[in-house]
Length: 272
Image (cartoon, rainbow, N blue to C red; front, side, top):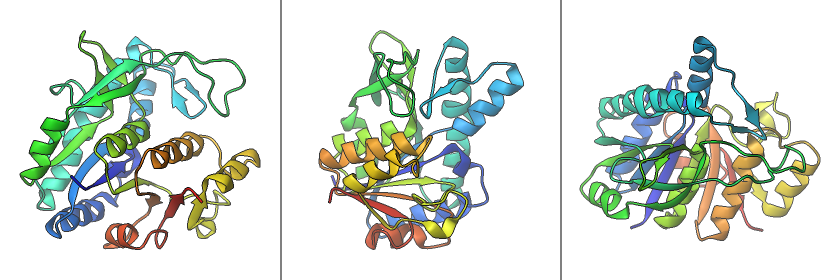
């Protein structure tokens, strides 16, 4: 099945832009697009950790997930955010179905081994209860999509032994795109794309190649959480995803425009 996978950052779900995005997603579906939504919840998780007195540990743009942090992610990502996002889509006329990794192993995961990550020094980092996507329940997702529903996947994975893993939402979206052979992946956040100057939205780069991205990372133009976002996007391109977009701060109709005219609204990532 040819899909458009749309990933929403937690900062988008509880923003003024959410009704616009929900309406655009519903509109894309009425035009015949088959859609899967993936979402994160970093800002809300950090806020709840602060409220509970739990220290947030972010290394190389990734959250280290201990037991307490995993509980926070369950409450925030598979709870409040998934419910609120589904409600926004219902309000736009769509038929969302909220899911997480333990929903019939919609996202089957394995624990991530310690690894060296860009921007975090030369030593391997153990991220705790963080996983990598092993497989998807494609039968379940296909059943929903083929019958007019929109799967809304929280970025939690699970394994067959009953363990739950926090997974970066961009990672989940990339793997969903690869494993379901999506034609487009749109990564939506609160920034309009990859910027040459993070303080200047007009410095958006419409088109970014793998070689260009490597230079921008080395020169410190692409930093912090944008580094893994870009790196994993190029990995997905190498595995067959047709086009990947980074976009945000959308007006009505911008989502469809970016899908049909890559780079017109956000940054489209291409191999060369």
